[in-house]
Image 1 (cartoon, helix red, strand yellow):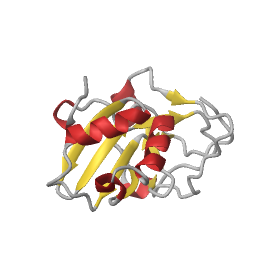
Image 2 (cartoon, one colour):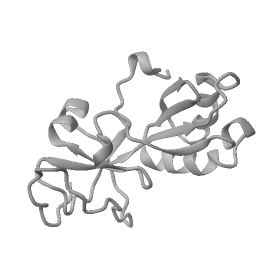
Image 3 (cartoon, one colour):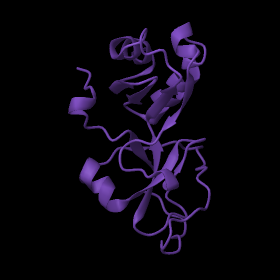
Image 4 (tube, helix red, strand yellow):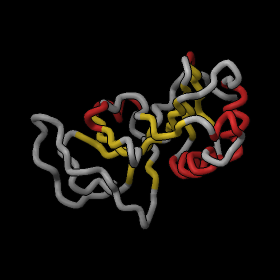
Length: 162
């Protein structure tokens, strides 16, 4: 059953296996949340969005707000496909602006909106997922997160995988 924002549990991101050059105390994550802006929310509701996006994978959450919506998919691969397909979907969806949403616990200054990657503090990962966080394994995926370190962050650790 679809969980709407009142019961929301999925943070809207998953871990990337490649954790190279990530500052100690942080984890690189990929968003599974799509942001839709300039959305005609008088004509589009949560159920319509869930029905459309479920064609591309499991939908964890849909939240419609004033002229925008957030759709959280169960994994990154589904989110990538859904993001691409939304651009050519029904007019009410295709006419909106579609990008990556940060998900819960990812601050703006640690999120690269263009690619949907961010840095999350290790404590936040544990709070959201416990000891069993989902790790996406993209063998050919190269992280795109630029080398911007949060203020006061320790130097990055060398190549490392989860």
